[in-house]
Image 1: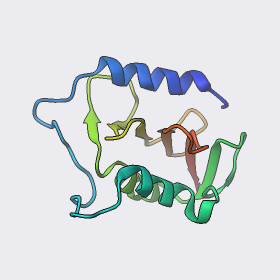
Image 2 (image 1 turned 30 degrees about the horizontal axis):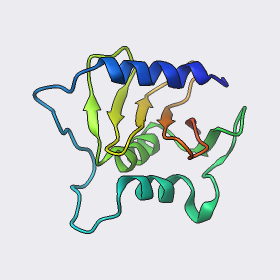
Image 3 (image 1 turned 120 degrees about the vertical axis):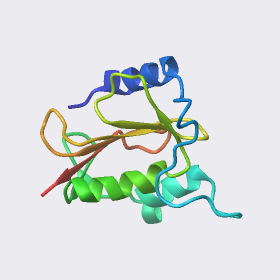
Image 4 (image 1 turned 60 degrees about the vertical axis):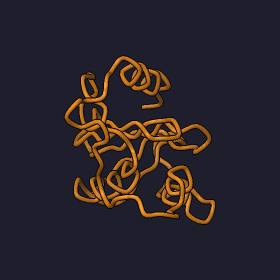
Length: 134
């Protein structure tokens, strides 16, 4: 599913959407701590530990495959999106979060190919999707 159009579709949905007035800063995971690493560094540490991409290569180098299920996907998504703002009013088929320094992360409980998937649109990371396979 090598699909640069998917990333463009997500970005367009984010651009059109307005933050929910009841959740302007909906947070997941832990609250930010003073002196905590900036979100780009946290994301880099989570998705490229030691400089190597997590998981194994899927159908393309930008699709990563990790052993796990929906609960594992939800845990990683909470870590990735913890400092972001939930995006509502889009056609994205799951939870979508705009990150403070640009980009988005989204969690789809199931994907076209089946497994739970995290979509990542952060430039320079080298990851577009993370699929969780049993």
